[in-house]
Amino acid sequence: QFGSHLWPSQLFAMGSGCMKAKADSPDTSNDARMARQLQKQEERAARASGSGRPQPASQARTNDWGSAGQGRQLGSSSQDGGDGANLTPEERRQRALEAAEKRQNSMHGVSTEKVQELRLRQQKEEILGKLAEHYARQKLDMPMGLNAASVEQLKQHWENVRKDVGASVVLNNQS
View 1 (cartoon, rainbow, N blue to C red):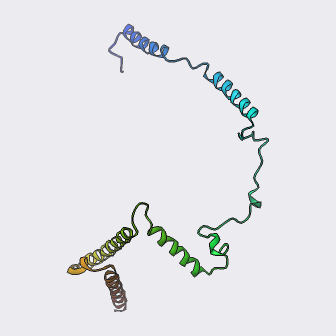
View 2 (tube, rainbow, N blue to C red):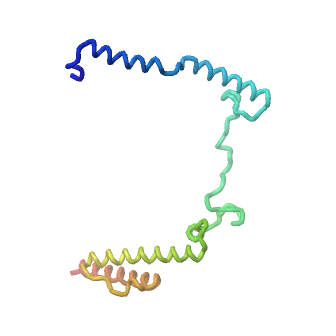
View 3 (spheres, rainbow, N blue to C red):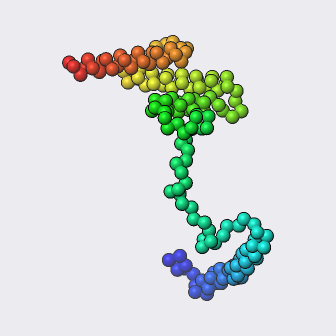
């Protein structure tokens, strides 16, 4: 359908242009032979210099991962007094929390004061978001001074709101 309005001689002329482009492409018939030859030269040079080049699979040492030992648990260090196997689950949770806080409090190239300020701002925005969502569900206006409140005040207000919602749910289910 594409070339239906062209004469056969015109189709041949179009096809012959494609053949010419292919004839101009570089000859790649010797590439594989050249690659094998270069690989052999590199292997000979590596053997002669005694470099630590990987050996063929037949000569390679096999690893027995079953005898490798227990290894180390993530988050433990030599200053912990060992592998931390004698810690209670609560102590492990506490150490994980301390490690997470340490990671949060350290940003590359930012002072610790700025990091604390950013964390407090983020916490404040999260709590304000929760409160805004809560008041929107209840179809109530958010109190005016919440944006000016501190993070601790917002946390306390959020806990009070959550308690009030829990109590109202219980009261509604009883009636």
